[in-house]
Image (cartoon, rainbow, N blue to C red; front, side):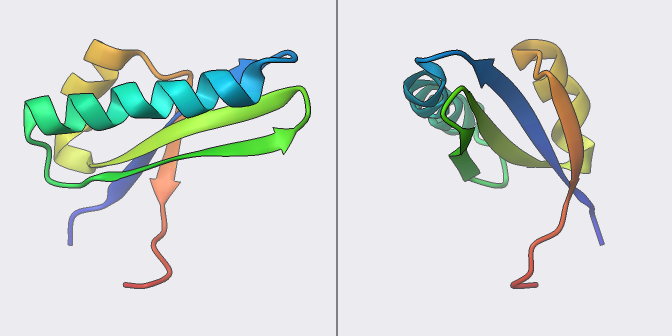
Length: 82
């Protein structure tokens, strides 16, 4: 089974949520253009001054996506529906 990796971008400040929301749109565009296997994206408000945007990729796709998009960090993604 191929692991899934959640690539994460951190945004801070009073416009963090709107920035993360907008960044997710670009992640969706990248997924479509590059024809990646997964189309899992999202954005979350952690608090009023900190939000994240993320996308999930298969481990085999992680390195080229990481190099192209330069996420701030990543972690193994656990889908509770699997």
